[in-house]
Length: 476
Image 1: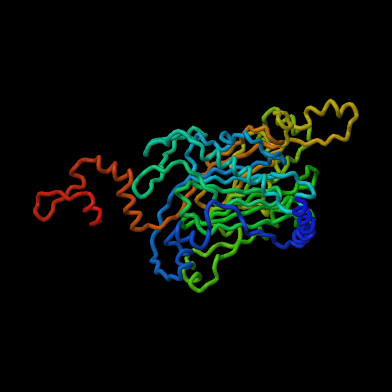
Image 2 (image 1 turned 45 degrees about the vertical axis):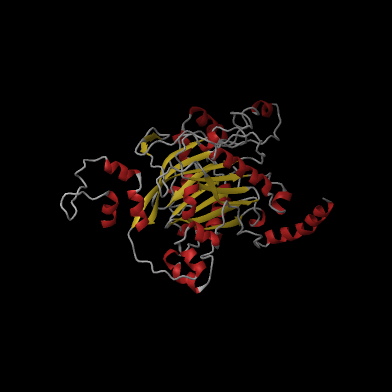
């Protein structure tokens, strides 16, 4: 124990120096449930460019018209205020696991550890982040009611009926509920973790991470962003978890804008896992984007810390009246999204119809400062006051993303409330012989067989014997 402590004291100045001079210290390493390169590429995507490159195979790839597959993506951000999760914490309500209709989960945390100097300057404490991942895994993979049968309808949060198509494997068997972690990365207090259904993992390729610190001296990780990217089939995804500069004084939004600009400009991903000639030739059709905005589907979430540009007393009054329209007209982030030349021009955000998510007393539904007004009247001017604000937000950009839900969750663990969004996501996938075979082995073909017998009836050479379905599939 003493030896480990001495070793930590020796390495601590080196870690500080690396962070001060923006030298990456394992910044491209991440946690996942299955390997991302090498043999994994062959196992999970045997016909992918990465798999061919690893085997030195130059496979001709004819141009094929892609088909669009639709998935449901759940995204959420939560500033947990440095509170370690209790062992009995149940995340089922937050993750809406009773719905059991999501294919991808993107979860961003801020302040998973207290932002003290030792946590900011020292080695990242991943133990707490791993604990959060364990709780997420337990909630996602907990047994749940059986999915709706094919062709049935499920009601979404907005009351709209949507079709649910359970994904089937080669023999048409429904997959059990099994979510796997594609990538999980922590930088100081920022944690971003992405989960997919177990049967989708073989279509996930080229996961990568990038960390940008914007905190103390413009480079430390108490503020900044963790970004992850990967390909799902033929579509590139990028998810960014941010914790921008705090402060509710006039002009503090400029620091947040500067942080956002730094994140978008400094975040960079490797273009390929391998630099071999075979990799270059076989991966040219799916060259990996290098910057955040180069990806097909991008979601940015986190504690963006933008405030409401109104006096505190008026802000609290409008919150009590639930006058969201007047408050949003003075919301700083909305101005950056909608104004020409704003820091988030070109991004999208859903309609906000929920209370501000910051700042609450812990384990309470009362906003911070309400209970302190009496103390302030008695002359105690040292108490900090925080006007309510929508600090926790989810933005997106790119075609093929449609937001169907945007709300908050009522957890009292920290001084922030989690914010979550649901997206309908279109993913490109090439047509192939396997796709045709899957069609005839799916419930869609089962429904075709229930049609009148003479719909797909034809005669053999003898003129009186109908062809069976397998023969008919081969002819097609």
